[in-house]
Amino acid sequence: MSGIALVERRAPGPAAAALLAVRLAWRQLWSEKARLASAIAGVMFACVLVFMQLGFRAALFDSATALIGAMRGDLFLMHPLTTASFRPEPMPRVRAYQALALPEVERTVPIYLAQATWRNPENGSRRAIQLIGVDTDAGVLDFPGLAPILERLKRADTIAFDVRSRPEFGAVARLLEERGPFDVQVGNRDMQVVGLVEIGPSFGADGNIVLSDVNFRRVVKERLVSAIDLVAIRLRPGSDVAAVQQRLRAVLPPDVMVLTQAELNAHERAYWEEATPIGFIFSFGSLMGLVVGMVIVYQILFSDIAGHLKEYATLKAMGYSNFYLGQVVLGAALILAVAGFIPGFIVSALLYDVVGGATFLPLAMDVPRATTVFAMIFTMCAVAGLLAMRKLRDANPADMF
Amino acid sequence: MDAPVQLRDITFAYGEGELRKAVLRDVDLTVAPGEIVLLTGPSGSGKTTLLTLIGALRAMQDGSARVLGQELRGANEAARVRLRRSIGFIFQSHNLLGFLTARQNVAMALEMDARLSERQRLDRAAELLTQVGLADHLEKLPAQLSGGQRQRVSVARALAAEPGLVLADEPTAALDKASGHEVVMLLRNLAKSRGVPILLVTHDPRILDIADRVVAMEDGRIVDTSAEKHAAA
Ligand SMILES: Nc1ncnc2c1ncn2[C@@H]1O[C@H](COP(=O)(O)OP(=O)(O)OP(=O)(O)O)[C@@H](O)[C@H]1O
Ligand SMILES: [Mg+2]
Image (cartoon, rainbow over all chains, first blue to last red; front, side, top):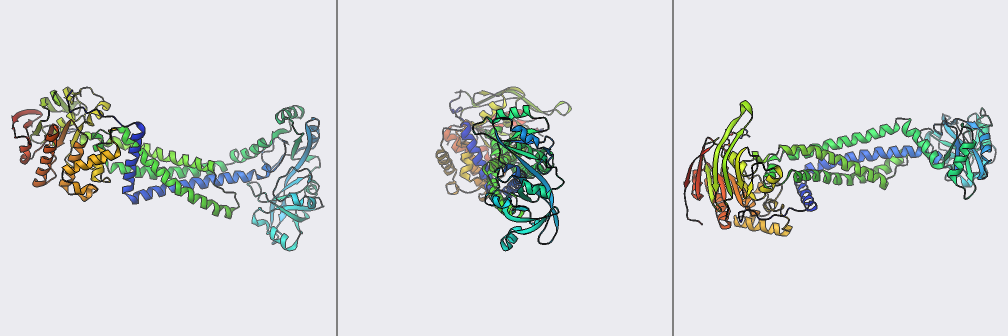
């Protein structure tokens, strides 16, 4: 061994090397601020697009299940052919009585669902509205605003109107405040609006009305008294829900499904997610955002490498490995991910407020979604980085002399 | 002490089959510890190719090359990358990273050595830049320096990591006479004071005076080894 030749070098550990690589990436990005700004804007754009798509998607699915989600019961009976609450398949009311045979079952409450025509009290235009009929004393509906007006709903021909219904139904809340209870035409009957509840529109219904089971049958005359759409079952305290569910399945004929509250929600949601293209449309929108963002990041990284091939080759000649230079490129990608996500997150949160207010959709920023979007943006940038890294092979130190 | 460079029967060809073009034939060359060897010869005689083989920038074909105690015949990529860390390279153009200051550029040569802290790296870089006369230009970007100053930064970078060997290919080609001579004198003095051997390719007859020995190549062979001893600095 020659004396001066081999000074024993100790290569930095993986973490230290990665830090140095990321610092080099940062210095390179920072040196061209206009380019950095456009790269960040690209990532931010992708970020906002994905946030909006996922936000709309979740809001639509949430509103689709708002009605079912407000039902309170330990178990529910539903016809197996009912795909979604706005289009129920009726089942015989006797099933509700049969369920009472089990000693754990304390009470069974039939629920009636149907759509009827609502006549706008302001301009007379007609529009289909969702009716929810239930024994008002049973306590199976948990809509905000319902509890104080339950007594009024027991009177003949009274209804409670969903204030979050689409505005096309008329300014019912304002009319109610100005005139007190007033008549509107529902189906072919004049019904009196006596109060307001909050449910919200969904894919299946632009607006909702809550009324007693007796009043429901007055509006929907063609309906057989013995046909019901949903049964809420309340069990005695301390009952084993899963066990009762099993026994009900055994006892009842196959024209009913026995579902827990969570299963009922999932059933409703699955219809909108799987049986309609809505889920696909938003997933596709998110994907497009990610692809556009990836192309932008790839372009920036690629031209950074292509424009500095000599410098990269020099680093290789100095003894930097391909792996290290790969880390520099990946580091740049991840810096762009973080730097684009932060403003993207802020803009999206603001847009949620603005757009949510305009569309009546419950758009809200939450931690799981922010985490998901960050993971997507991170992956997007990492993939762009990995693709751009192939260009590093063109930096050949043997061509340097 | 072993010679830092020992080449035996180096034969090298570019291309395959019909296009195969022999560039080096049976080259034997030894560089002694601390020796400054200049390699000259007509264009296309294979000087650069020889330098890339010694610098482990290219895979060997035939013959044996021991560089800094490492046999390069059959050495894999990882071994060659490791060896390069012990070699200082100076290229025809400076190849400094444009977004780093002179000092950061020199410190880049030290970042592969975990024995040094960031502070030590920057101090060491400043020290070397001072030795090449750039004490007042530490924080300047390459674009703010003249050609000669940039090449002096490359000299500082090549010597920063205590290399066992410096390889340079026409380092003065892009410089005017005065600054070219100044750069090679700096290189020579720094190398001599550290006992680092240099193998330098040049066409420039004005700088032959820095050499301990001039080796001439022609058509892939070494044709003349004249010992031109100079009084060491
Ligand atoms: N990458 C390559 N592929 C194919 N042929 C090459 C390659 N590099 C060099 N050559 C050829 O090999 C021969 C030797 O080239 P080399 O660059 O080693 O010569 P040189 O002595 O450095 O010349 P110069 O003084 O002009 O720099 C030349 O004929 C050249 O055309
Ligand atoms: Mg050459």
